[in-house]
Image (cartoon, rainbow, N blue to C red; front, side, top):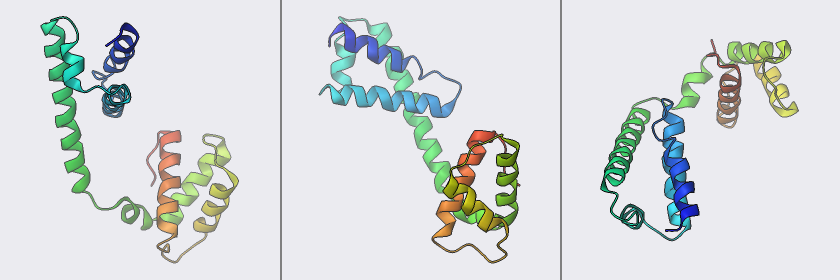
Length: 151
């Protein structure tokens, strides 16, 4: 493994210890993608450092911790109800909430999202099967941009 690749890998693995779970998981995935892109595997990487066993041990522990955390998060997701069901119950109220944030300038929406939410805000019927994933995606975006939880 050349020095440039080693530095790129070290940069990605440096984020594995982040307090933010998503950031740590993304760092692990980015490191794995880099290894595969260079037609290597983790055994190649971990054995190519000239016997630096302390570093190898640390990297192995971090990788295993990330794998365990990934498995736990996947199990938690499997135990939750589908996202669309949780957000379809109060769709009109949530659409109004999102539109209020947009009007305050707290978030940005494209014209489709804005029009879709305006339609849903006045709707009293349940969302259709086609509308549910679109609505859920827009509410996720608003939640991410605003840092707030919908009502």
